[in-house]
Image 1: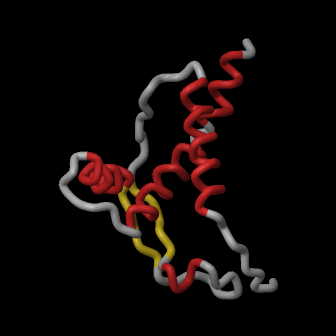
Image 2 (image 1 turned 90 degrees about the horizontal axis):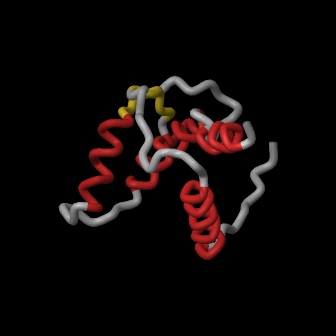
Length: 110
């Protein structure tokens, strides 16, 4: 596999996140989501993008801890840091796994 570099524009990331939030707001679903699972596997950064080796340095994360960590930013208790992207990514991955958009769209077509 080639190591192709991509350049991501902040404006494109912003537009995608905005589009996602508008989509969620327009769905006929609850305004909150239940994290009915908590603990997940995490692959260390050093191994995550090395597709030619099996990861051995697995760690565990907690969606509840991730959300609590992110809430501190919203409550003004700390500044946002790079690591917040990891925490948010874990939560977004969980929501994607739950197929919240697809389920809401299917409910609207019945």
